[in-house]
Length: 379
Ligand SMILES: OC[C@H]1O[C@H](O[C@H]2O[C@H](CO)[C@@H](O)[C@H](O)[C@H]2O)[C@H](O)[C@@H](O)[C@@H]1O
Image (cartoon, rainbow, N blue to C red; front, side, top):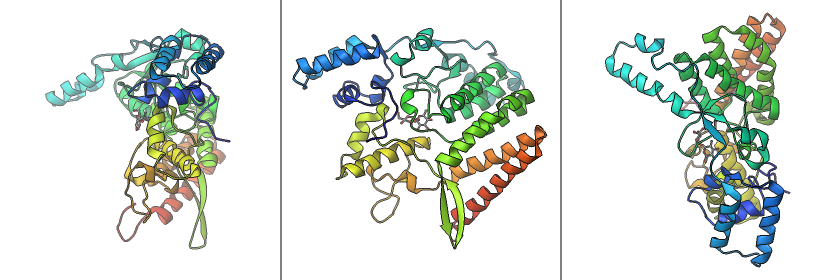
């Protein structure tokens, strides 16, 4: 029994996804899973299985293309949105004295409206026919093939929005991520259901710290602190593991997707990567480590690769992301725990503040004892 990417029989698993993606209808596997259905899910599946029977379970590439053309469409899920708080020359522009840097900053700021989107009514009314996860507020997309919001991209995006005096948009993008924690218990990698098997580096708590620093909106903090705690408990409970060294026990986190099938948006690519492995079990481990590597946001880096001599070399089929306790992930979490303790001090809740200070202290000790290499002088 496999741990699938998510429950949709169209976008996450099943015969239809497998057939279309392995037929290489599109140059990029992501194109297919970002398309909307033109008819309801059940009708699509019925038509699919009828088409398979009519073609002796072996349809030609042209027949598959025709099926996709009739049942899937690439438009209509997102609307362009002009942010109401956008200013082409926010205060920061006047504070930059170097004319070259000033015009560079203006050029960057001018991009906000072209990357802002909101979810169309069609997605809200018919969520099953889209892979997009609807959210209430407009958001900023990375652009290119990435037409949805991403968790850790939004961390840097928020820094830019705050510097651009776009407080309403800033609040909205943070609220979108908070709503993911309320809905799923964690923040998915990005705003598509096929990302529901993994997160991205945990930066929501420090995003709220950045937002509150700029706005002094302590009511926002008070209203959302339990949601921040919920996300941190996800990392403590689902991504942390005990480690023993010199008779002492510590706890630290690693990236660890909860699914062992190919990424729907990189389906054929993952099958090809893992195909060199001999046993089926090795392939499922490979898929899990590819998804776990994507959870790190660094898809991909030789830090996750180990050859048979335990050297960081080889190709992607040598991926063993879960073996690594990454210092950067654990540093992010340490920063979150410290921020959480400060938040509770601001909210005059000293017991909770002490609880998170203690978690932070234990994390810092573990990072120092386990992740520092004295000999090389590096983390
Ligand atoms: O800018 C968005 C993200 O883009 C890269 O990763 C994403 O694309 C991968 C392939 O389609 C996908 O598997 C991964 O889960 C996505 O996050 C980039 O590596 C990320 O750092 C970045 O957030």
